[in-house]
Every structure is written in structure tokens, then in C-alpha cells.
Amino acid sequence: MVINEKNTALIFKAFCDENRIRILNILSSGEKCACKLLEALSVTQPTLSHHMKILCDSGVVKARKEGKWMHYSLSQEGLKVAEEYLGILKNTGKEKENE
Amino acid sequence: MVINEKNTALIFKAFCDENRIRILNILSSGEKCACKLLEALSVTQPTLSHHMKILCDSGVVKARKEGKWMHYSLSQEGLKVAEEYLGILKNTGKEKENE
DNA sequence: AAAACATATTGACAAATGTCGATGTGTCGG
DNA sequence: CCGACACATCGACATTTGTCAATATGTTTT
Image (cartoon, rainbow over all chains, first blue to last red):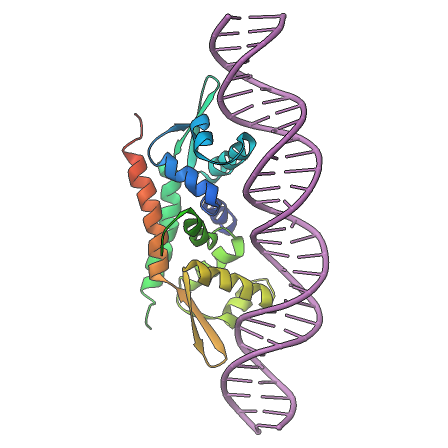
């Protein structure tokens, strides 16, 4: 996939909503069933489903279906892409500081 | 400042718009005057001003006034906060993979 | 097959966001 | 002091986003 401005913005959409940050924080303690996430958040089931779609589309979360349950977990690859972008910004910017 | 979900989402607002990614990419090559950014983007001056406010509020960009010019540059501290959050997600999530 | 359950999709709606033109504010040069 | 300039703010508007209730889809159990 070509990494252009649009794609980069899409990745970071994962992190720019309060409820999605809550979801990511929960997932950081390991894979969770959608129903567990629903318990932890003050949103309805369709709203959770909506956020999970955005998180999966961004590549930061991966989904696994098991019978009628959906299990979600953080994607190390997705997080790496986000982290690497920040790393590039930091490093190319650093040399230019205090010029 | 307390780092809660709301603040975390605020930081990442910097990265979730296509034009702001363009601005950040440009700033990665060093401090730039607002007028230079305006040349590089296909937006009007008020729109640029709006994006610069969001970027500064998020802490990822810092502003320096010099006469009638505004100079913007990446904030290493701001980028570090964002990077550290991703690092926490990655590391706490890692141990739990393939369980 | 039917009922119960977990999740996704749809449609509606209010709020937030990105954008612009018009205008305001502060700064410099004459 | 005044005009020109750089940038910020305001008001308006269309689009996007987050949310919900209602409904659809797919799976398990009885």
C-alpha cells in the first residue's frame, strides 16, 4: 500500500476519539470479546460495532471470529506503522532544531 | 497534565486530517513560516490558521512569533508523548499475543 | 425448525469538523 | 499616521462523525 497523506490520516483516525482510546487501552491487556468491550464502555452495541470497524480499517486492531463471537486484539504491525511515522517525524525534525 | 482518554485523543487529532499530515511532513524538514506552508497547501489562509491552531493545541507543533511572521516547528516533546502512548500499547499488548 | 444470542447494518439525527469569504488585529515601512 | 502586509477570528455552510433505535445476518441450542 502506498503511504500517502490520506492513508496516514486514516491510520491515526484510530486514536482520535475518546471511546476508541478506551477500547485500545482495554485491548492492551490482551484479546477481548466484543461483549466484554460493550460491558466496559457506555455505548450501545451498534456504536461499539461502528468503532471496531474504524479500528480494524485503520489496521491498528485485528478481528477474529469464533462462532458467534468476535474477538479483537491490537495489531503489532498496525501499531508499528503508526509508531514508525512518528519516528520519521521526530528524527528528520530533530536535526533541524535550534538552527 | 493528567493523561486521560480525552487528552490522548486530543493529541492524536493532530494526525487524523490529510492536510495536517501534509503540514507535519513539511515541518519535518525544519521550522517554516506560515506563508511558506500556505504556498505548499491548496487551502486558504483562514483554513491554514485553523489547522495550525489544532496542531499547536495538540502539543505536536510549537509556534514562534517574529514580527508579523509566525514560525511553526515540530515539538519534540509533543511527538514524544504520542510516541510513548503507542509504545505502551505495543509493549503491554505484545506479551499477550498468541495466548 | 424455532428460539435465543452475538454482532453487523441501516436510517435518522445532532454535534463536530473542514472549508471559505469577510473582517479584525497587530506590525512594519514610508 | 497610514497603507500594506501577515496572521487570527468570525459567521456561514456543507460534509463528516458519533450516537441511537430498529432491523438484518449468522450461529448455537433446544
